[in-house]
Image 1 (spheres, rainbow, N blue to C red):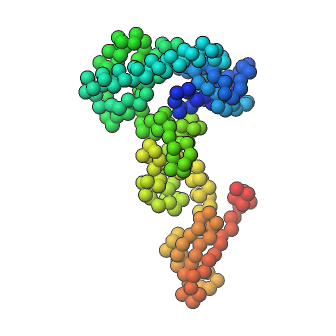
Image 2: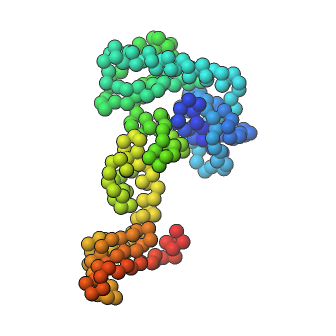
Image 3: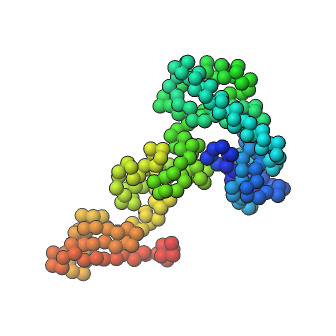
Length: 264
């Protein structure tokens, strides 16, 4: 089974879809099925002979008519978004709309929103259904999902990882920042969503491996010049500086123990 990474035409969200027996190329617009809904998007990457099969499945390469209908759907969904915002004020609901999306066949209209609290939107959903005569879904998402949906530029100057290629977002903990000896300043370790940077996860395993055997700052260690106190540690280079009373500050390097680690 081959897999295509699809980007929705008017959103940053990515979809991974399986396909077979379709002569597909990057930049093709495709129609895909997910959760019994028909949608459309553009292929940005193809992975051949994938061992994993995804819930979404490509039905066909999009026709000119499919693309035209999608553009109309985007326009109508934007109007629906504005109408929904007015209804939210009418019902005095504590929710902030993020976007509205029609499925290609217009059998479903999905509104995504954020809120600090649980929202009773039953009356809102009923009125929206009576206006648009289709299945209405109001989907509450978190701030990380919001960033993935809206997109943006990270503090690194590049497009947000979540909107660019991350299909599933891993759990990120403050211990990962501590593990990498980063300054625990929110502006430096938090992403556009206000949560910890997803990229803290990327190098955490490597840092954990490199830290093995290294002493902590403040530890007393034995050196060839006598006992001393560890003043600083350079994890990436596996070096540390020790203050020895008889020789001042000396620098020591700890080699990786196993062959596998050395090749990493």
